[in-house]
Length: 374
Image 1 (cartoon, rainbow, N blue to C red):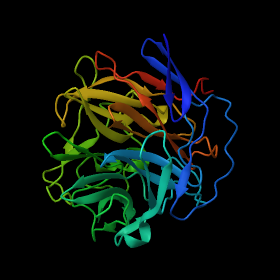
Image 2: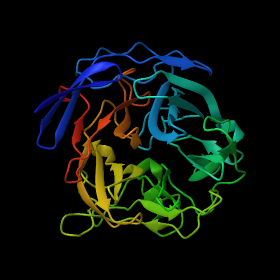
Image 3: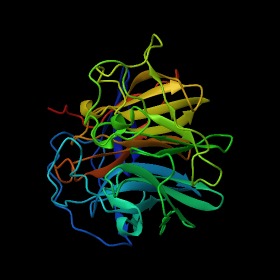
């Protein structure tokens, strides 16, 4: 079945076949720069038929956490730079040093870069590598949650506070007590409670916390056998600055109710947690890392357990795949990234496309290109 819609000012053709959804598009976005602007390289020739264009091209951006505050979309991405650090399996080449906040009044509208919202030099306990952040609003304040390695080179999660969704944000003097690993994602439930989902294996160090304490000499990867390592979930305190309870492990189960296994790289959790709620169900989505998919699982509680359901986004250009899901004006959207601008895995660009929940609650799989990745 073919359906034509308009998205970001261009015509899109949706071709539905089983659970797949393809968006064919060509177009551009505009950007208003209110912060420091760095030149990027010219965009690589699109030979794959990308479904979406980069939202901004004056800086490299990745890991987009999108939220709607007061009727406007705010995006909290990583800010990729080329610092000259050699590439390795631990992600050392992702050596980010600050965060920008982007905003838009509509998915088809102009994107505003509000400049630097937080710099690593203004985080007292930080060592290196500002990775994927998220944000939340409560008590009249905005909270920016971020993972960064401390002075001992261990990832912790910090929080910074502002009276504005675009910052500047002032970091707390210490990381959140009991926090570790990477990729915090904060979800507000209907009762007003906030939950943080986090964790990432390999370079995200989650496997080094298997015994409740950090082992600096622990594995650089994951167990080759047994159940897969689990993402973490914890309810935040009312002040949004601390955990209200001990951190819990989150179960992702197969169709038979058994935990996914470490060897199941097509489905097991790697990093990039996100939570959204649809028709009373909790949708936990995440990246599979070395198989480069965004997958999702569904449950009846913010703590799970969650039953694996399928793939939201197939692999993109570049090694990483990281996303967020947001509802805006009654429609659902997937924010994600690829390396279309640079062709380099550590210099990425964020994008957005429509997301569809089917009548049975499943999510239609999105192919990011009209042609297959080779």
